[in-house]
Length: 247
Image 1 (cartoon, rainbow, N blue to C red):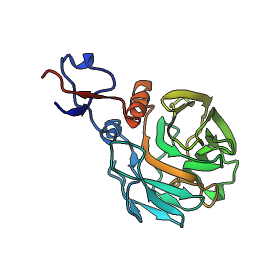
Image 2 (cartoon, rainbow, N blue to C red):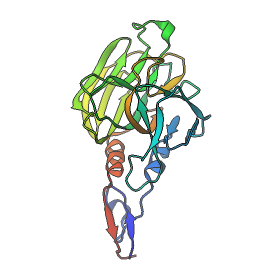
Image 3 (cartoon, helix red, strand yellow):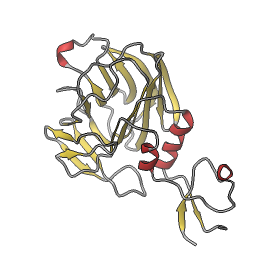
C-alpha cells in the first residue's frame, strides 16, 4: 500500500475499482497546450518556458526564490519586492483578438497595486485599448485591465498571505471571465487584441511591480473549460490522496 494521487474527477471516469494515479500539476497544465508556461522555480537569471519557448530573463533587482505554492512539488516560486520582473522574450498573448487563458498562483501579504502578467508598451499611451495587465488593485482584488480601464474585477481579495489560484480568460467573441480559487469571481467584455510587444511577469514595464510571490504562470491559446480550472485549483491545494486499493 502506498500514497498515490488520483484524478480529481473521480474513479468512475476510468471504470476501475482501484486508485488511478494522477498526472502532476505541471503535466496537467501541459496537457492544455500552453503557448507559454513558467514554473518560476529557476535559480535565475534565466527562466525556463516549460512549453518549449525560449528562456525568459529576470530583470532588475528585488526578485528572489522562495518555496513553491504546490505542497507536494519541490519546484520553487519567485518573490517580487516591488521591483524587478521576468521578461519572457516574446509576445505570448494574441494580437489578433483570438481566445486566450492566463493562469497563475499568487501570494500577497498586503493590499498593494501590482501586476501579475502584462503585455504593455509604454509608447502606446495608457488609453491604448490593447495595453493589457492581469493585475491586483490597491484593495487586493484581481482585475482584467485594458487601455486604462478595469474591464472585470473580483470582489475577492488575494492579499491575505495565502496562496491563491488566479485564472483569467477571454473568448474569441470578447467574453472575459475571472476565476479565484476555482470559483468564478467576475465577468466582463474585451473586444480588442493585445499589443504586439513582449509579455512580462510581475509588472508593467517600469511601474506597478508586484509585491508578493508568483508561481506556475501559464498562457493557453484558448478558453480553458471550467472543469479544468477547478481541477487545477484542487490539485494545487492537495486534493486528495488514496492509500492502497484493489488493482
